[in-house]
Structures are given as C-alpha cells and as structure tokens.
Amino acid sequence: MTVLAVSSSQPAVDWGALATALGAAIAFVIGIITVRQKSTADRRAEWWRRAQWAIDHATGDRDEVVEAGLISMTHLIESTLATDEDIRLVRELARNIAEREQ
Amino acid sequence: MTSDRARQLAQELVSRSDVLLHETVESDEGGSPRGRLADGLGPRGWLTHPAVAVFLIVIVVASVTEAIIAALSKRSPEPPGFGLVLFRIAVVWLFASTPGWIYVRYLIERVPSLWDEYVLNLYRLGLDRPENLPRPPLSSPFFKSWQAAGGEDRLQDHNVYRQKFDAYSGVSASVTGMDRLHRARVETLFPVFLLTAVLSVYWTALLWDVHSLDLGSGAVKLWTCPAFGFLGAYAFGVNLLVRRFLRNDLRPSAYAGFALRVIIVFLLAIGIHPLLNKLGADSATQAVVMFVVGIFPVIILRVVQRMISTTLRLVVPPLSSDYPLSNLDGMSVWYESQLQGEGIEDMQGLVTTNIVDVVLHTRIQTGRLIDWIDQSILLLHLGGSEQDLAPKLRQLGIRTATDLLAVFPLEEMESGSKLTGSTKASLDAVAKLGIDATTVRKLVRTISREPGLGPILNWRSGRPSVLSTEATATAGTPSHPEAERHGLTDLR
Image 1 (spheres, each protein chain N blue to C red):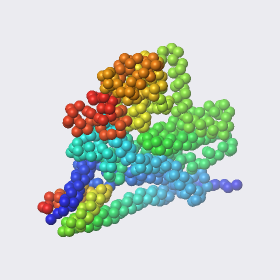
Image 2 (image 1 turned 45 degrees about the vertical axis):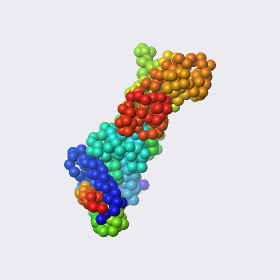
Image 3 (image 1 turned 180 degrees about the vertical axis):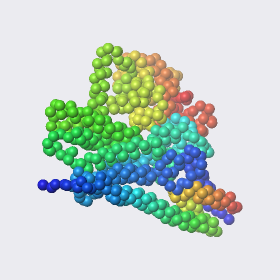
Image 4 (image 1 turned 90 degrees about the vertical axis):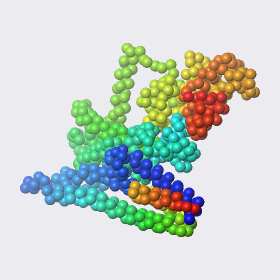
C-alpha cells in the first residue's frame, strides 16, 4: 500500500512552482504570437517581391510582357497579404496603362 | 503603345481593385481605412479565425494552469507522476477545445458556401432588383445581370440582405468576399469562449481527482453525481454540435445552449444526490441516473411542460387552425416546430411570411419551403371545400398552385373559346370527378392574383429575377417567361 505523506512544514503554496508554471504559460502565448508575426512578415515580404516583378513587367514595352504583368497583379491583389495601400497603388498603375494611347 | 488586350486587362484590374477597396470600406463599420493584412483583430469588434483559435488556446491554458501548479506543488490528490500529468493535460486540451475547434472549422469551411448559397437563392427567388441584391459569385449566371444593372456602383451602400445574414450568423463572410480570413463578431463569439472555459474547468476538476469516477469505493460521494451528469451532457453536446456542423446550422446559440446544459446538470446533480441517497441508490445507480439526466435535461423539462399543457387543455379550449402545417406534404414535427419558432403557425402564416428570414433562420432547404408555400396557396384557396376538392385534384396530379396553373393556363381559362386539346381534356376529367368548369376558372383567376406566386415561379423556372432591369424598363411591369407561360403578367 502506498502512503502519500505530505510534510506539515511544507508551505501551503509552492510559489516557485507557481511562478514556473505561469512563466511557461505566458512564454507559450508569446511564442505563438511571435511565430505568427514572423510568418506573416515573411509571407508579406515574398508577396511584395512578386508584386515588384509584376509591376516591372506591366510597365514594360512588349505587349506580351505587359499582359503577363497585369494578369499577375490581378491575382496578387486577391491575396490577404495585400493592404489597401498596395491595392490603391496597383489601381493607379493599371489606370495609367488603360489610359495610354494606342 | 498599348495593345487592346493590355488595355482591357488594365481596365479589369482597375474594376477589381475598386471592388476590393469597397469591400474593405464596407467591412469597417467605423468607416476608417483598414489594412487587408490580417492583424488578428481586424476591424473593431471583429475577430479573424486564427485569432479565435489563439483565444481558445489561451482559455484552455489558463484553466489547466491551476491544476499543473497543484501537481507541481505535490498538492494533487493523486500520487506525483509527470507522465500522468501530461496525459491529463492532453485529455483536457482535447475535450475542452474540440467544441471551439469545430466552430473555427465552420468559420473557414462552411460560412463562405452558406453565403454564396444564400445570395444565389435571393436571385433565383427574384425577391428584389439585381442591383439591390448582394454581389453574386463571378461564376453564377446572375453576375452579368447584376453588373449590367449597376450593382458595382452600389457596393458601398448598406445592403439589407447582407445585414440580415451578418446579424443572423454573427459572421462577416458577406463582407470579406474573396478574403480568406473569415471574421466573427466578438460578442457573437462570447458563448464559444464561455463554453470552452466551462469545459476546461470541468474537465480539469474531473481528471485531477479520478477517485470520483471510482464507483466501487465505499460510500457515494457528492462529486460522483455532477461528474457523471457532466459526462452525459458533454456526450450529447458534442454530438449536437457535430450534427449542426454537418447541417450547416452551427450558430453561437448552440454553444450557449451547451454551456447552459452543463450548468443546469450541475445544479440538478447537487439537488438529486440527496434524493437518490434517501432512496438508497448505490453509486452505480446514481451514476447511471445522472448520466441520463445529463443527456436529457431539456427533454425531461419538455415532458413536464407537455403534461401541464395537456392538463390545462381540459379547462382552456385549444386554439387550433383550420389550415395546420401538418396537412402539407413533407412536413414533419421537426420542421413544424422550426417554423413555429419563426411565428409561422399555419398555412396562412407560411404564405405571407418573409421567405428570406425563414430561409436564413430555419436552414430549411429553399426548394422544400417553396413547395410548402405552393401547396398552401392552393389549399387556402380551396377554402372549406379543401377536404373534398384537394383529393380530387390530386388524382389529376395537381398538388400545388403552380400545378393548377400549368394544367389550366390563365389565358385559356379567361378566354374560354381558345381552349387547347389538353386543357379541354383536363376540364373533362375534373368534370367527371364532380368539379365544374366555373369553379376551376374562379380558382385559377384568384390564384393567379396571389402575390406570393412570383418567387415560386422564379424558383421553379430557375432563371434570373423577374425584376430584371431590362424587363422593367421596357414593359413597365415585371415579366418573366415562366409567368407569361402561365398567362401571368402582373405578379406584384
């Protein structure tokens, strides 16, 4: 038979263990948030790299290249990574292309 | 130098950018610009689905923390053991977070398709002009008519159909459109968070003293009843959530009901325990009784309510309708109770109801609802003779109002002399059943003036709205191929 004896001299609350557990919980939450932010920042940087590529092509001279750039931009602005500022920029650029002389 | 193709692409890109920017303005009730980039919280008062998941995790962690502290400080009633502690944490995590996780999956998987289905139903029913309805999916046959009617210019306007959907579901699938981050209102999510917190605490308490589940150890403990009652409530609650998920009817109110069930069962257990002790029930009997109470607390309450209402009926005369919903084909007790919950108690209520609200609130299939309304129109117009005429008409295959108009077109019945061979044969057939031509003519005339017939004809034809701008602009009154086939030109 196992007898579980708890010493009467033991404090009611083990503050060290409590602090450790709380610290672990807080660190866990902060860790999740940090990983999410890092992931979002990385994906956004990649999005912007593709957007630059598309803008470069859309402002090119050859028709096929311009069309490829515009098609790419149409897909890129659907991404949740695109901010309102990005979409406004693309819109003005596209408007400029649409109003060019034939 | 720019090619025509490039100019066209650029123009489309401008239009699409406008749509996306309008969507983001619409979704922000405060009107201030916001980024499409997910920051978790989104516009004020809305949470994205990843943020909801993080909140759920935080709640479970907070609940389990206390038990971890107890285990680490050797104050747990169980012998210390790291493996056992980890196992318990895993079980609490799994059981407490599963209901919340189901809701996050619902936000991601089901809400967008529900929104599309809702919008397509609105167009197919032809309840309003295309430009007043929300933007239909690009691939739908209604998109061009919406665009031609100037729907894009009205994207910024507040839309009553969108507001109805958002208010009902508490989810912003309608405003996010192409956005993959589905948002839900914080206040709508409160029951989901509350339930997760309640379950976390309950499961933690239950697993940190497993002796309460040991039925063979001497006297019956007080904690045994709430513990087994909770197990019954949990089994039923999770099953209900999964069923509602599969039926696309998972609303935060289901979570509020689940949390309420757990609380009621806890209180019932505290009350029933002394009673069972008095009756001499052993711990196994008490556990079984409480498990059943945990599953059926509401049913037990309903049984009591029905007993009381049956008793009262002897004193107070029942208020029954002459046109009960139960007379309709395909109507079950379940559907009847759903419609009654929307204030629809008989056929007259069904014919005059707001279809959009019923479709949204009951999640009854639109085709089925339309068929019931169609049947109701015919049965209501048959009046007191319903018992005699309805079975006779059914012998000819006439079950609904639109069936009657298909067999006896209004145009032919009005003119009388221009009867085609099939209409004449049908009139002869009804005459043999004892229904004269004058009765049929009156019936066709009155039913064709029924205002509720428009959405039914739209639905059955499966074509774009009767209120298309082209039709209204040229004819002045709504027209529709299906309506014209029946000789109906003024449906509203």
